[in-house]
Image 1 (tube, rainbow, N blue to C red):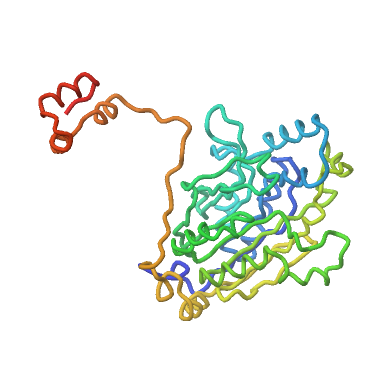
Image 2: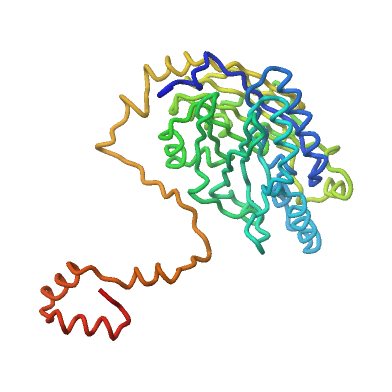
Length: 377
């Protein structure tokens, strides 16, 4: 049906997996992800979202402190590549099977190894999987933040997607992309109804030395400000998945990083939440524990919010401001086929006459000159 909300459903149950990866261990992290998907499905979830780079660990923890020895950096970079996910079907099959068996959409944060032959670039990626066990698509982070640029490539407009699903129009952005005003506007203009935001933790959580009560001041944290503002501006639900990492999640050989002064994951304490279209918490932030958070998202909440502020309708002024989005992906090599090259060298007769008249060159002389240059008409 045209212009339905949440795929025509009265409500959709969503879940957030606030869990730690088995750091840089792809196989064990995939096993853990599948268990969490099964648990969420048993809990009635029609969507489950995972934190940023859940498969298989957020790499930029490593450069948050002091400089590190070259050999440690090299080992860490190789470990990142080896534990990254390839979207070639074989490695995503366990996730697809788990989604199919649970009957739920999965939005997975992953380090993704480039599928271009010969490239070893890793991207920070959201992978979208359907309840039928199919990869719907991906979103690669457009701009890695600060030291993240050491490890991740840049995404393109081809991955700026909102998927039309049976639970509504589903999209997502990664970490500080949720502060990129024009990028968020592009998602809003695509009619987003459920927005997944994922993060490596919560910067304002203050680390592990603070009590949970102190962490309740999430209104002062940029991440929680961002998700509440996006929910209101989009008139959408925001499912916010925040990372968790503890000492015990650094298993051999990566357990040595616990003592590395460059390894800073004190703020990987969670903070996951679900926000309604008015910017209020349906499920308030949860810190310091592995858990699955649930929330029921009601279609009427979107209707009520948009009755007041509809950024695609009565509160839009396309006659004053418009957004230009470059959707095509850019490639390092473009093959120009012979027929394309031939077509590119052909000038229409009308264009020849225009040039002839403008520059007062006889048409016969212009045709002869084009022939000398290897062009035709």
